[in-house]
Length: 117
Image (spheres, one colour):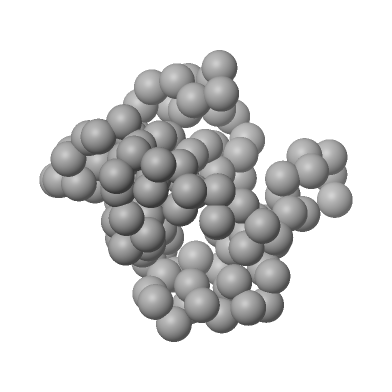
């Protein structure tokens, strides 16, 4: 592996509950988090369940995503101190896109805005 970002090897299932918790603390739902994941990656409910059951890592999660949403370029702003639109590593950028969308959900943004409609 040419990079040493620990998150790439982390199981998506290990981080997923934190996305849910972050959303639910702010009165949002697991379904909304799932909708964001489906929108971003093209996965569906069965795919997501398989990913969680298989403990698929982030690298594989994004490598096998059916289709990255064509509107991801509309995701802008700062997450974890980085501007998502300026992150050069494609995998890290996809991970941060997901972080940013969940963050927007937790901040009370409307789903249409989060899904860049």
